[in-house]
Length: 384
Length: 226
Image 1: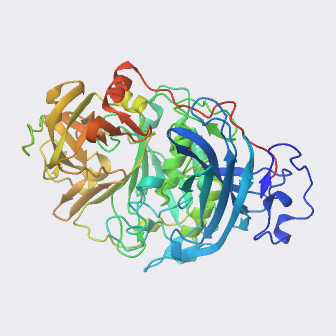
Image 2 (image 1 turned 180 degrees about the vertical axis):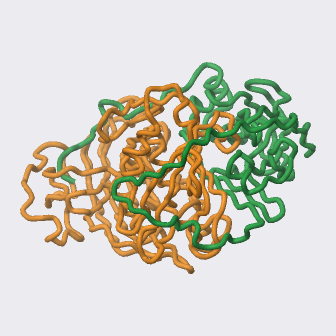
Image 3 (image 1 turned 120 degrees about the vertical axis):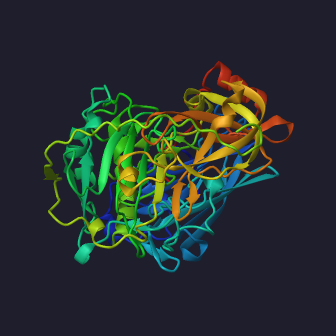
């Protein structure tokens, strides 16, 4: 379906509550999900390029209001250096919704073909689907949050370009050796609770309720030389933000240095720490129990000792771009790892915050320090 | 280690006493929404208490030329010859106890054989001290989430970063933090900036970080339907 950008973007108020309406397989532009009356989030976008020039931007779009997703292609020709000169394109947009990151887990699939995008800014989109419930994968089963994927075919005269977003977001339990980068993925070898070296690991649900995880806050956290108070941030903002965020995900406790039986030690280390390896932070897991999934025995969050400031402001409304030295998005991300969450490849979350430019497929996007919708979906899947 | 040989020489300074952590009175506090409970980690026995199973999840800044230029002390072009035997990075190479694993930065490291063909930054001999993290030694294993998968005989640009030993004392080791394949016609497969000529990568390293190209202001971001 074709829409001329901007002009007449709808301003209709929602006719009824989102939850009362089945929006599956409907035109998002004709519903409050995508008619402009409610915010739409572009979870991930990429550029379709040929000969080093960008022709289209392809997007996975999400309506928080309706909890629906769809695929959209935008004609970006004529946008300046690095873009093809202005021209008409045609596009087909396929949206596929899975309850696990495998082709066998497909739940919804729709293709909108033949959209004409006559010039810059014109877009075409697929139908929309409600995000499906969590699924499982492999045996022993690894619980999985739902996954989205879009496949685009862009035609420029006789030339045809196909673009597959691959599965987004892919959440792996703990440290499954899975590359979230679209071009590095190997879905055939990973994501299973098979208790190999890379495994599903969690803090469990003792007695069917939330486990309690004890974080020891090392004195080194006060030695970075910046104005941020890392201990206060952990105590007052980061740990409460993750604590029992879903009904059976872990409660978070903190303790002063020297406390006995901590589950996680949080500390600053010099840049040359061999575990850090040139990174900003790492989470080191140094023991597991037997069982599937395994329980974490002990972890250490190591953060590069560099001056930290609160550059992202007082409100957790998204901290865009990098590099910056705000401790909160960084440490919150590591705390997510200590709960068993790995990385993913969308934007606007704690555990993943990547975007594309026409020059680079992955650059820093917008990060948060409070778990966002898709962070929480993963937590819900792993602590059902 | 020189050339493609696999002998690795690690400086092993005299063991110094690890600075004791300041131990203050233990005091626990519960984050909002929390309640007191026994940590789940104490419930079940370890998979094999005699073995170290360590995994490291790295939160990595995008490996752009600009970022690597800031981090890498030595940058060389060379052929990857293979990995050496894993060694513990403790000062005397001893196998650490459980307590050492938790309280220090004891890890398995593998020497990397690089047949140096060119030097971009630093000392040509730096490659003799190149290591990567991780490996398996007996029943112990250390695994990095961003482990490099290097192909023997492939030419790479190696970015080397000086690291400390398990007790955070100076060592000669240089960690390979990135390795970009160099193909025929000197085309480099970069991590973020796509394929570039080797000369352009060298210029980017020597002359400064390449600016990230953001979407141009003129690019349409329709806010209308769909």
